[in-house]
Image (tube, rainbow, N blue to C red; front, side, top):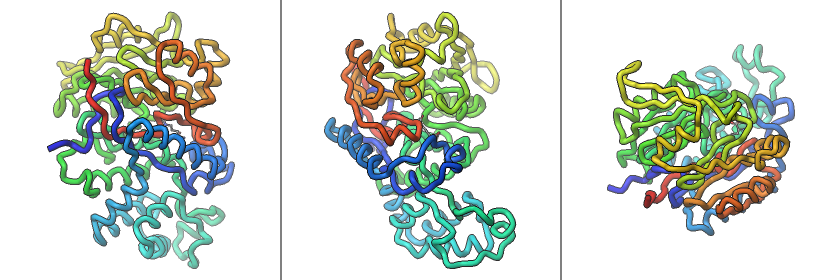
Length: 413
Ligand SMILES: NC(=O)NCCC[C@H](N)C(=O)O
């Protein structure tokens, strides 16, 4: 049986990818909600959709099948029938703060009356109070949220499909994410894997599910090859979650090495892939701002062994040598974002200059606005496909963040 998920590298020719076309959720909020929703500005939706379609078409033009999260979620619900729709709604409402009570009942009636696609879109874009003709009588609505406009918040970060789940080999992690603004997102991934005809009952391994208190996000999970991963210890991914997934991978898959890389814990660099990506067999982008004196950074290589609960950990700080050893390479090209200039590097990293999506070894998709980093990539021999990025970048994510690979061809060397 061919697995519907097959992803053994960061750079193998991309065959199928999961995207989310930005919808009303990216403009259904006010400036004072932005920090909590992890946005830095209010995007202009028609332009963001145009840019996203350009991104999707760039992938299609290069032989990639594009799947859409919102469509798969509705199809999964169609496949699961009335029972699944009810179960999903109960879970979504509970995770939105309404486990029971009159507001729960009104929201459930409102959402359940829609067809599955409309319901999925509505949940994603958020439910405002003025949409439902109902006067709440429960204490939560009366005493806590009286002046708040929303019953259910929008989920504007959904177009960063990289993060709520991450494909690894012929399986995936379905992630418990850090901030409330994103925690409901992975429920869509869960119903797709469990109920969509393309994925359900196909023996897909879930290396780690979303029912955890410890945190991990896909932007930190890099599949370097068919047995080595790199995972960021970051604002969004905790060390205990890395140990947990490493243990599961060591026990249940061919993965035998996880390199945990500690990066600064801040909004601009919230995931490892905002500062470090693999783009060819022996080439990586790296933001100079994560490297200390002499190019050092804390790395912890986890392998099966006799340490804590069967894991051996080696601490080293020479990133280049750590990668060369793990990938059995004689040399390695670490390409600095912004060509190492501190002002350009800081500026371009902010707009995802390090966040490249490799669609084949040495072929990358990047934002056009990062022209210094793009030119440098070309000088280092890469083929760079630029996509437009004025509105999409306001959410603080680039081409890798906006894509979840489902199938990549295996590497040939
Ligand atoms: N992999 C990524 O780095 N994704 C970007 C996520 C941006 C989003 N606004 C967030 O803060 O979660």
